[in-house]
Image (cartoon, rainbow, N blue to C red; front, side, top):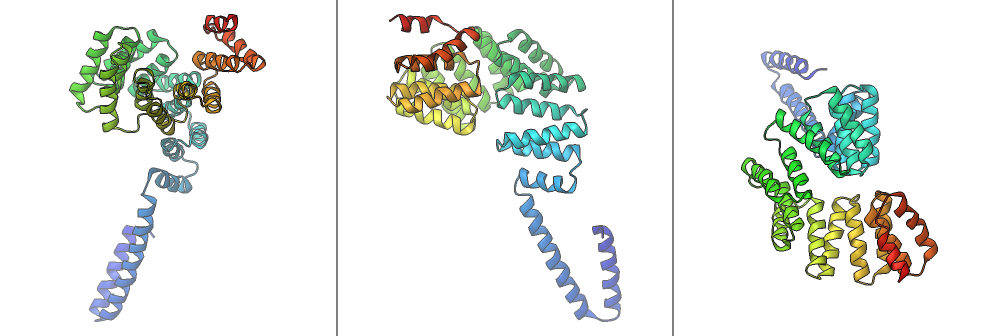
Amino acid sequence: VPVLGFAFLLAGITEFLIQKKQKNIVIAIASIVLIFYSFKTYTQTKIWQNDELLSGHALKKYPKSMLANSNYADALAKIQDFDNALKYYNKSIQIFPYYSDAFNNRGVLYGNLKNYHLALKDFDKAIQLADKNVVALANRGFNYYYVDNYNLAQKDFLHALKLEKNNIKALLGLASIYTKQKNFDKANSYIQKVFKISPNNAEAFNSLGVLYLENNQSEKALQNFNKSIKIDPKIASNFRYRGEIKGRFMNDYSGSKQDLLKAIEIDNYDYIAYNNLGIINMMMNDFDDAEKNFLKSYEIKPDYCEAIINICLFYIKQNNIDKAQKYIDEVYKNNCNINIINNLLNN
């Protein structure tokens, strides 16, 4: 019975019993109703405890709903259950293949998995379905940035800002491009725009830290990564960069290892953190873990040249030329810098 109809029915019965002076029955009915709704409230509160339970409850009621499947996928992605999240994004898109946000969100998932090719395809589709989807534009811009296509990345960020002038992600995207191109003043101008919009923005402090690190100002970089961590301790790259600083500039290998492990705990697909951790393992003479972490980096991103080269160097130093040969082939295949390998072999 719908709640409103039930309430009217209950009110009518109560009024009738009061008129008949049956107060004991009224009290008994009221007690039963109170217990019933207390139980319902308790069970619903358990469901509302987190997004996964809430969206999962909705999905059980509406298994063929595009939105229910998409929302459940969002909740699973938040807890990094990417395999199941992908399954429900696929189902959502299969039910209704015209929802821009579903393609955008699946694109974000592919980006988290470092599968930038599939991510870009989904962002393309999201923008095709809704050409003013600013979120998808900014996301596509960053994925172009990750594959070193800075021209297309810049185009997307500028388009996003044209639609939404204070879009923080697009502003930081432009800052990232200019930092990579060593145009630090231009990069900083975009970061400062973000601080005017959001003075305690953790991502902006992260971007400023990267700027200082690229400009060989490790102390200032460290200060900004620490600020970012204090505001938001769930940004993996803060710990990765801080671990890099501790290892490269401070010879604090133990501290570096701790930070890199934290980065991986937050983002289990951070292939750069795995590679850097392998380097620290080598410095600490922990060769078994070094091999494991170099291979994990390569597994996540098979075209990541630094990991490929480090695996080659590792096996060559171990005098295991047979194992090294496989990865030497990968060096050529991915146009990595073969000179490092040749120099080591010649020596």
